[in-house]
Figure 1 (cartoon, helix red, strand yellow):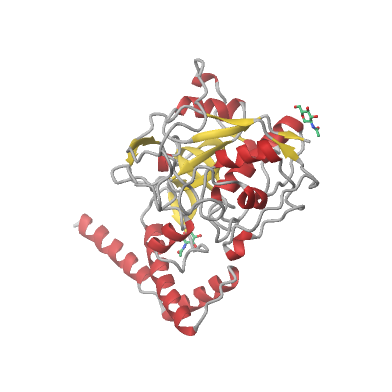
Figure 2: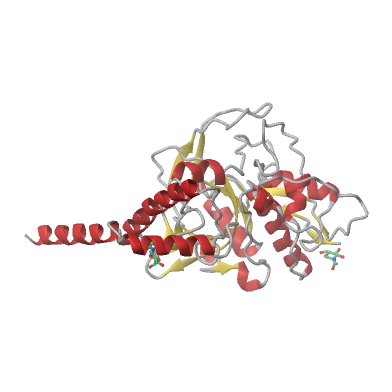
Length: 369
Ligand SMILES: *[C@@H]1O[C@H](CO)[C@@H](O)[C@H](O)[C@H]1NC(C)=O
Ligand SMILES: *[C@@H]1O[C@H](CO)[C@@H](O)[C@H](O)[C@H]1NC(C)=O
């Protein structure tokens, strides 16, 4: 009998939330349009976006009632279907499917117990404000530039905003992947290699513009530009190595990481644990990991900075569930578009929430000029 009552209550709650009054939803949609400066080409387009929005709000409300360790909220993606979100907004990271780019750093023995229980590089003043890549697949350029900003601050004591646009517009697509590079996706390594050769100017000297139009823009990085920083290269951490990542975050600095962000669209706060391990994991996004900690209710987490603006998630950040014995799955996604020259399509073993432990790297020798 008790079970029945509990069940009936759940159903009542769920349906109360699902069948919203039209007036409420229409007001929510107007707020959404204003907040994210949405402009639709026609009345019909607006109506179809509104219909998708209503379905998303119902899903978000149902999620919020499910008692999971994270909440969802209406984000800038609330007028897109899941398929549109994944194909249009998560097209910025090209999974190279091989170890070739840079050798993993050999790890000495790490005594995990000796590390601090939490670390947050934001508290050290070496993390810039959250950025917004907009409708350009330049996550890789943001992960690249955010890491340089942090290591210049660690090495030189001055935190500067550097140009994600220069990296987006100028980094060559030397791996010859069909249709990739700039707003069509790449990897942070190529951004660092470009900066090593040509230097990088400040955000003020070359502000980000690709977010509005989704165009990579043209490159003018002539030598008379005021180059603010350079790097000497980059290093990879060993793949799927929890101890190496924890140790690096505790003792060296932030990291650039590649993740499967397919289920991040409406993340609103809390410790996220919503990437399944038993279906194909698709690494499709690059972000910056800036620390770790423990939530009194939800347990251990990684602190991850996204590039979807400060209104998304927890002021632009997401906390990912951190398991000291990480779970793993496989990424067997074939390369999208035309495959890269010399690249295999092998299945990869990827570990951690949303594969966050798989592809982990940082720039070395980041220096103010
Ligand atoms: C979901 O829950 C969060 C946290 O309580 C809240 O901020 C958000 O507005 C909720 N979203 C919806 C659509 O109910
Ligand atoms: C930054 O630090 C490096 C060494 O860590 C030093 O060579 C360089 O001169 C410094 N640059 C500035 C602008 O302070």
